[in-house]
Image (cartoon, rainbow, N blue to C red; front, side, top):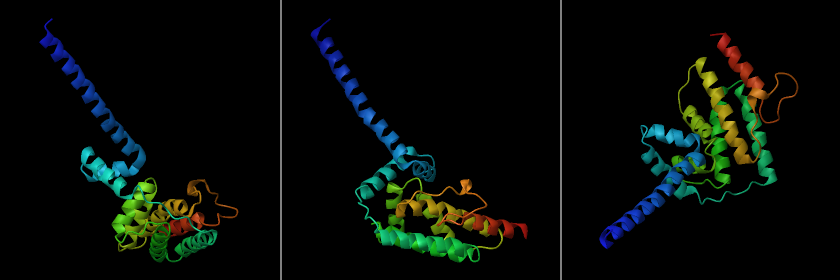
Length: 211
């Protein structure tokens, strides 16, 4: 075998190793984004019409802009006040669902700002929260959209209820408490102090039965 052939084989081997080394971090990056963003990853892919490269580019840029954000802790007094206000909103839902959802959106905005998500644009604030709370941020997105959409009874009540329930998971994360599981709560006995889900369910069921 000539020296030229040997050199060619060695060069090809080096190129193959280099190509494999470059491909590995790219694949790892894709898996990393999928793991980091969870449902937000799937949502981004759907928004880009199934184009995973475009979705991953957007998510990567989003992580680059907001991944360094250091959240501010809440004082015990602030945490207690937010919890009290949220409980009041859920009680308000029984008689005024739309007003309660609008108030919940304002409270979440204020809470997010207090925790350090203080971007001037609501879209950028939502993007920042999607980096740090990707599994619950859609609850805020739903609440935001629902609060700005005209509603008609009785079908809208269930949609309002679902928006508030989903937003509660993000609220619990931001306020530093473990989210409640509405499906596991009892219909009898004392209700959790910050989630009268049974009253909300009874309200929506009553409205639905009268339609």
